[in-house]
Length: 464
Image (cartoon, rainbow, N blue to C red; front, side, top):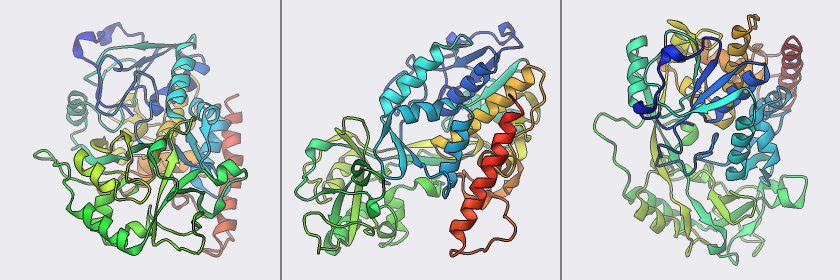
């Protein structure tokens, strides 16, 4: 994810760029993966990145592919989950993001969570050592008329570039707000109250089965917590801004405002857990924390994105049993997120219709999540490289996870109501002869993933 762009003083003139070089604006998940794919196809790639020269409130380092929100790539189940299937497709395509995620994997039950700093360091080192990749530090504030470009500027595209996109497309930018969850020092948690257990003991090893730390609440504690959330001081929006949140990343206060039981049926659901200190005591709600680094010294509070002010956060979160004396390595925050109306602006090759020398990739296209962003970077990088090399390459097959997602953002979605989308089986074409509804779900999902794997492998084989 890229928050803004570089200072204009450091910019290289567009006329100096080689037309056969692929220029990628933004070194987040999408930009990094796009660069890797194109470089491996033999194309010269320049990544335009601002950090560490220009800092942001969310980033802490100058590494490429830095994770600033969660450290999770979500489910790794490639037979029953669309996100896990996307993992599988990216691995099959020699994806850099998946390779580095696997290298720095942390226990997280059935999810793929990573040690965020070594992960970003490895992505950066791998790209910087590739003979076809270079990094330049300079702001790109307009849409170039020449050369081959991928804009992967993330959810906080700079004001200048946003204005250039708006001027080119004539369309208003769409904006919502992302909220970041806090991170807690593990040694400040009261383990006489909290216990380690993955929901339903999921995982093949004991480490996986104890990948989450659980803090239980009784009904009285939960009600007091909800009252505190609702009355806490929150971040105010600037004039002209509106809070159009993406449902997959709602601040907990917004969820609480939707109903007092909403959190108990969301990130605080108590099911599948047994209190190790008192097995007969059934919690009314449970707050879960997940390891955020390999040492296990940092834990992030799962699903606790927030727009509360810092002082309010420490007061409210210390109401959670086990976190009464919690020390925070990072408090939560909120930031603007911008994406284009891709169904009206992009063709099925992810090119800007009005300027086909430009592609867009990542969250700025209206996909949501690390995995989806990297996947769109993978596809954009391959499509752009094939075009540069003079080879015709069809976009990803519709029945694959990659194809279902890119089809949605480039034409399958309703443009008037277009909102950021995670990959999910609802984007897939039905398989004939299978039952609908919940009872047929397991067989249906397996059929989706089997079909997708076969078609994805065929697509890859055509490029070898």
